[in-house]
Length: 304
Image (cartoon, rainbow, N blue to C red; front, side, top):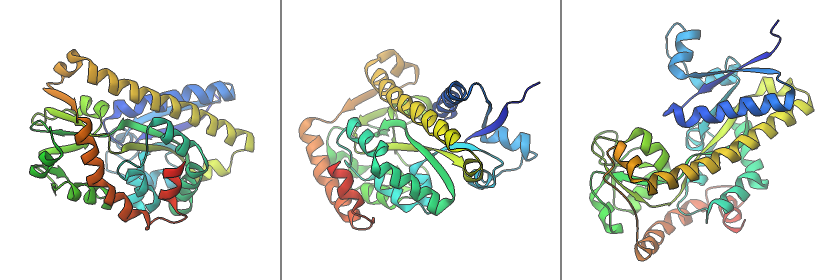
């Protein structure tokens, strides 16, 4: 007799292969901590719709809130668009000094506050923060050598005031389609490489962050010990995912064969002088938005 508790984890975003490993790892860790108590069903959005909604589209966040889905992993920018607006701060240019700084923030008091912000605004539980590839880069249809090169480019529009101001500061246009530049990460780009955008420049101007989410009713129905198990499992697999994302990015950057298999023509870094110019160009964006977030959030992150 199978008396395991079934838990459905919905893969909200694409490419699914970048997100499924966190879900699988979580399943391993929670079962280590609970004595193999859970059966984790991991489904892509179309698989979920076909299995549970007769192939009709669903709103993944609505499914999570209603408890038809118990867990998922979402971009922090997506949550910001849904009303957890403090998460927009995490995309500010050069907010994080390096990966160690980012970890201190995400696993410390500020990270706890941000996860509480998700519950207050969206009535779901945020358990831990992960990367979706780590530091951002720009993929385009031509090489970028100088910061001025961005002024001739257009970026795909994403609903984010921070992204909009970032592109504007670089002199870039933005549009819904036919953009010649994509803000991405090396692991994401390696999966989703565009037929026309074959040149990548590592700008490292901010992070692509995600968070592991859980249905609030399920959380409330758990014992304190079980809640601690879920938090610990999420923390372990989030740390592993952040490390894996960084390693993947380094491997893609340094392995010519990996680049060739996706038709990537160049992956480069800005020179030290150009990197400083980029920081100077984007500093006013971070300064402009700092005052919009409560509790001196941006200043506290900078000082962490």
